[in-house]
Image (cartoon, rainbow, N blue to C red; front, side, top):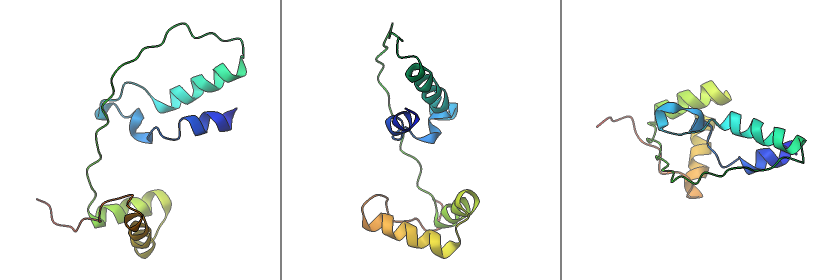
Length: 103
């Protein structure tokens, strides 16, 4: 059941917990609530709220910032980061990495 909860919520970005991005839920709390519901099969849904949600696209990262974050969060070297970015770009999953010019 924990694998089903993680697969159900894999599409929710980790940034959903950030109040600065105007999300109204905390991803960790939602996943934990689902786990508790799965542990008690007699649970009943008493209310469902349907609210429109607007997802803000993230601001594209400059190349240097992308490399800094990849190093910090994944321990990637610059070359590995750029190779991964190139593969993602070729698959159409990201826009072309930005140069370091700020407009």
